[in-house]
Amino acid sequence: MDNRNKIVFLILILVQGLHSVEEYIGRLWEIFPPARFLTSLISENPETGFLIINIGLFLFGIWCWLFPVLRDYTFARGLIWFWIVIEMINGIGHPFWALYERAYVPSVVTAPILLILSVYLSRHLLIKSTQTLKMKNNRLRKTSNNS
Image 1 (tube, rainbow, N blue to C red):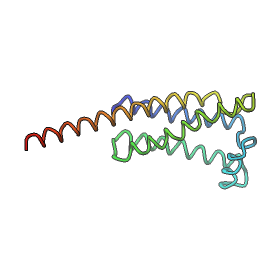
Image 2 (cartoon, rainbow, N blue to C red; image 1 turned 90 degrees about the horizontal axis):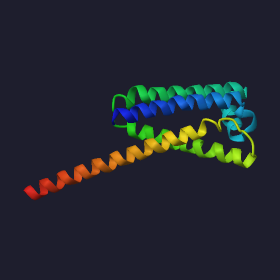
Image 3 (tube, rainbow, N blue to C red; image 1 turned 60 degrees about the vertical axis):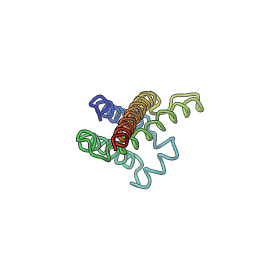
Image 4 (tube, rainbow, N blue to C red; image 1 turned 90 degrees about the vertical axis):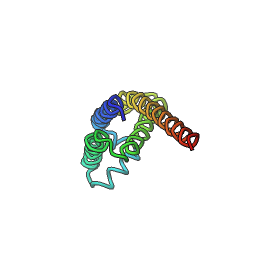
């Protein structure tokens, strides 16, 4: 994976951290039933549950960047796609929720940034995968023509 995509992935994780801060300031767990449900699975205190989930998610993202992504582990691409899906859901879901409510909802400010970064990353990963497949196919053709 090229360095540009590694940097964009780190930016995606950092913006997710800001997204979580925006959700915390807006007390998302008080107004969004799925967040309330998830936080209740972690702690009797929803605020504590929210902090544990979001700090854990952020630390997992940093771990993904520091180890699998930076060191080009074979499963790094799968982890990046996991993050892309999460951030596309965030990037689309929060703005639609705000439109439905016709008001600000927690994290609607950072959600579009997550969407832009996740679309950018997905596009570049798909382009790179296509290029890799073409190179492999060309090598196969050359070896079969030489036989």
